[in-house]
Amino acid sequence: MKKINIIETRVRSFIEDIQHPKQKKKLNINDLEFQLRKLLEDYYEMDGYSLFYEAIQSLQIEGQLTPIHNNQNNGKTPSLPLYYWVNVKAQADKWDRLGMMKLSDLFDFSFYERHPEWQTKEEWNRIQSLYGFLQSSGERETVSLEERSLELFGHEKFLQDGISFPDGKGFLARIGISEEQLKVVKYGEPFVFWMKQGKEIKDIQRVLIVENLSFFHNSIQLLESDLLDYEPELIIYGEGTKIERSFSFFFKIFPAKSYLFYYAGDLDAAGYGIITRLIEKYPDCCIQPALKIYRKMLDCMDQRNEQKSGQLQNLKYRDAFFQWFTEEERELLMQLWKENKRIPQEVLTIETWRRWM
Image 1 (cartoon, rainbow, N blue to C red):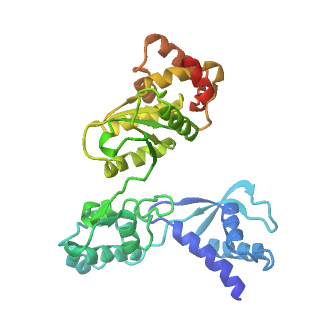
Image 2: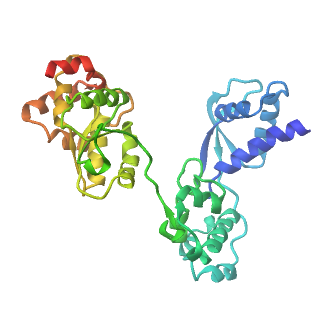
């Protein structure tokens, strides 16, 4: 009986976590069983699949799950349909109106009046937790959003991870409370950087951000040999798209003044998006493509390769990036685009750099 409870408890807990008060969710039954096998070392010894099968059958009888009959099954014996609908979470009794009135000095319940399906026990517990915090928030210190989310709702990702916590992402909007009222701060992610030897923080004026790790290390060598374009005092490893989250961290380290930021990434759709979004997000900063470096990359057309699968080919980002270049250079960039090719930053090795010296 204990073993049966382990399997059934795990399955029920997972289903309860992903149930939504408004919409059905599609579930791949093999994915669910795979997660169970990872969690339970003795899954096979306890004849786990038979117990898993029984748990799914019970949930189907209860109306928690509805099989999707499309001639696909999970390939096991006895078989189960490969996909199920996780049905909408059963609604508990609606909230007590007097209880809502008692909290209405801080909260706007109009959303819940229009959408009574959100009047669940779990949502009410969150609201009460938030109300208790707001009553004494004037005495509280500012912390990270993750820390506050853990304190109030039991998980650090509750307010941010809409996939794992579908009820969490829009919770503050539903109750009409801003992140500022939670007394939270969003920290910029730290990044790796290199300051030119002999320079101090006060000397920083020109900053080069490079997308990839190999060229970051090559840039350091070139900088210390006084061979790097733009002669920056600081090089930042952008780490792909991470720089879009970590750029604000720069202003936690370096004094407030005007800086000139140069960005160099791959010549591909993803790279065009990174530099364009940085410029858009930080309009008060002087950020521009490191054209001298990109031109060296264009000189390596023979090393172009296929675009990475899954990259979003955004025409807006492409055109915004291309406008920095001459007409002749734009023709080469457009050739890359039409061929679905790219030039990775790794073409800029210490050896290839010599051709431009």
